[in-house]
Length: 178
Image (tube, rainbow, N blue to C red; front, top):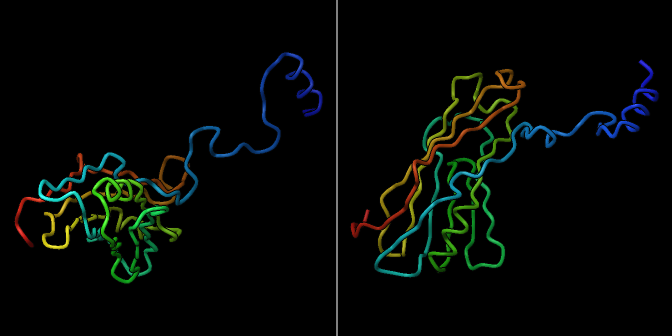
């Protein structure tokens, strides 16, 4: 076809079109290995204190050597430090700060994998994450969430997909030290 002629006709008719290859954002697609927010509705609560001293999120299940999993968070402008240990797959947050700031940082937590096949050929398609918070004296009961990974080449569109289930994740102190 004569692309210049077709383009002229479409322009005269007021039809929108894209020259070249459209970006993934046009159809709401995620690029391969796009980070996924894990718990945007997370609730952090401690009836005995308004300050927290730390939190951990550990990828506790479905891991394999070289999986490339990462758990980045946003801590800009607050007194919380973040450190991720890729060997133990554990994110540690530390620093005395408000529950609201800890909740904000934990809500920003994303899961991503730099591996081109984070499902390990479909054999490790689920990651289990364990979450805790501490006020410096007590540690909360563990909350869990699940990340399901679609293997490359599987529908839709052969890209890696990630689905997260948090079941209304709430981290709450019950008064028992663990």
